[in-house]
Image (cartoon, rainbow over all chains, first blue to last red; front, side, top):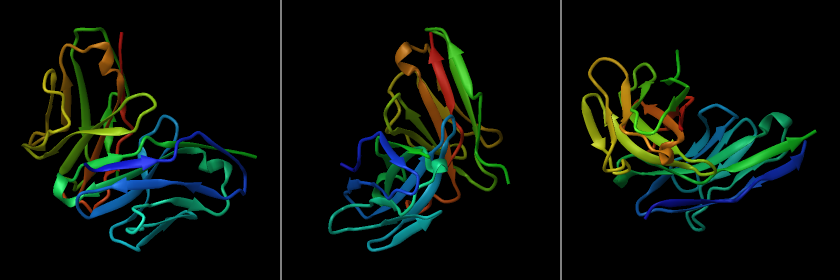
Length: 113
Length: 115
């Protein structure tokens, strides 16, 4: 079935450190891939997306590349800030499964000054 | 342009009571999705609705749970005879189109506590 496996947390980094959060997927069709961010007490906000192989999504310094050969969509940022502290969710949506999103379990990131 | 709105934000119910969760999608969006987030877990799909139609309810528990999206008014997720295991955050999302390449916009969630 369709699923997302996400790097377990929590992750703690110093400000300006490099961030990678791994995400791999299994999909029966041709998925679109997403990263969402959830701040404490809030809903999920779209961070970036990619809808086909080799696409790169980017936003606010975050990037992720849709790698079909490795079925991965790893999230990266070159220099994290304290304000990036949040929970990050990888998700996929497949055209033949009625538009529902499949989410990873989330990775909690804490950035310390 | 207001985002997805959910109310109440927090809901406390005793076992056996009914819980009603409301969701108003973003303006112009006619596709609504409900997800449940259990503690320390990701979001799990429950149901996908369009106006007056349930499109996919494959994630809904077979009993006690129902959802609707009437022609007028918000979408409602209804849980009858709640049990402690229903305690979770329930998120609503909406999208302008029903294709998989479109992102879903999420509301702030309703945190249900069953005592």
